Length: 412
Image 1 (cartoon, rainbow, N blue to C red):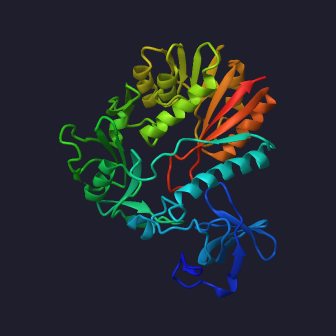
Image 2: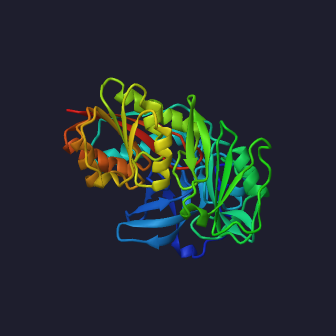
Image 3: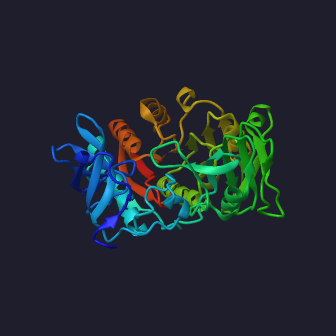
């Protein structure tokens, strides 16, 4: 990489608002940070810690500045050429394609460590790297906009659409649907495939008029679902096979973005709960992924508020135990031996933590998709009498700043 790497060929909108900056760390959300001329923290997407850059002020706040990267004047050895043409055209989905894969792994751990230190006041937590996962062709669920009948991704920091020439991180079946399919009057699509079953599904909003899907698997036609179909009592679904288990995924259900990542998360959850006996609580269970993969030899109690996911969980956990279709925060707690919780990005919060603690599990495996919410939840769980033994950081979303973790909380 040249010591003067042009990142944005467009001139500054206002040269008077351009200044040089040394970038020294990364923040939740993927932007990098440095101290501006007046001491305020500057947030810069597209930079790498250790670089000297030129930036332009986009928005000012009392204690921070949002800026855009104009030029890299001294580049990190970890800066690489982004591999995807759609990213190069402005797609905002993969915000870390300019960073080497090894450095991405380090930065994710840095973000987790920083959030635990700042937000939870926990300085000595063991941070463990998860298994190395492929950073290309991995995503088995992708959402895209539709513009003039064709799939498109949103550009960085705007609602402008970027036509999809290729998608470096998508499963090949999904990439074929995105690049060759036509979607009529639709405004948005979600494409999901079963990597190990070859099944595929396209969810089209608002309707399925004039939709044409390429043949991605002659042995298993693609299921096409209109958004209205999700509310008419039908349960269109496909399957994924993990660790010898065939799991059902309905159109309206959440499922992890990649099967190898789902197995890696489940393995970490099993490591947390294995030393302890008793029933397993699967809170915010989705389709029952963790109950199915980690509940062997235990009875499982799953709680999930999404009706479609709860219906899937009943099928996937039919040999294990019971499923409650309600908000976990409203569920009547019962004693269990161990627990796994996989809440939405906002985290457990105080209500979720109180419900978990009321079940008195000896160990809790907390699956988090946001380091800041992990830190807030960790502070609450530690205050409730649990010790944070370790946090495992996973690379489920290669070439993005998204961070997934499994944290081990042990009672007492």
